[in-house]
Length: 73
Image (tube, rainbow, N blue to C red):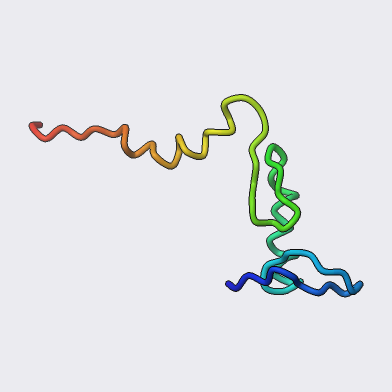
């Protein structure tokens, strides 16, 4: 995946984008499936809204640290 910081659109305007208009459309489709998250205009960031759900990404990411396996049966 390559990043094109100033992609020229069909209407002649430029805005940040990823690879090609087709790739942007595929990545942009996730907006339909993620209701509770805000996705940035350039489709590179997702922001969770509200309360403690904003840090759930980090809790899920590091949850394996909480698993303690017994070494003595």
